[in-house]
Length: 306
Image (cartoon, rainbow, N blue to C red):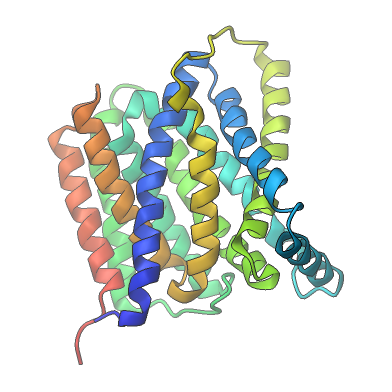
């Protein structure tokens, strides 16, 4: 069985997954109200980065952590591209704002699972995360393959109504999340404080979204929308900051694949509850896909007794 020393890390990963499911619903609602998923992502990311800018540089431990990141970049102990996890985070947040309202949190989450599973397997094998190279075993391969199969089942109903592009967005975002976890884990290991890694991630993500929003307005013009009056729709950025900090803390203990699939357990359960209580009633294919994904997580995370 998985060692007892990993249980706190597994629990944190699952909590982070639940927060991601709630964030998906909040950002999806914000994007629907604004009629612009990228603008909604900017607001979500912006609230989180403002909190980090107020906390990290103003504390001694934060300044020391940022100094250690700068020094690691100077001596090439940390490569510049290790700081680009925020690009993947921006893609994920944008995909929430664009596709969750149409797909539902359940289908969106299962699609992210497929991308994360495939991406994490490759990232672990390449040794991009702080834990180094992790071999592709039969158990890990079966778990990742099962998760990818779940995407096809969950998205089956969406393929016939022109939603293939919307389904592809969270799959690509899931691929990016595996890289984000690996890179932020490296930054956190160097900084010695996960909130510093969250600040680097948030700053890069916000810059990425600024560029994307400028390109969007240049191509299609300004899309009229309304700022929602529900205050909770603006809380997605705060949840995102917490998720990044959790990932940066525990990924080096679990590896990218195990962390990703464990956090997905929380995402799936949270998404199922949100869809059941909300306007999207999950179809049978979503329930089947969620069951397959949970089995995939168990196959990958739980080691057989010797």
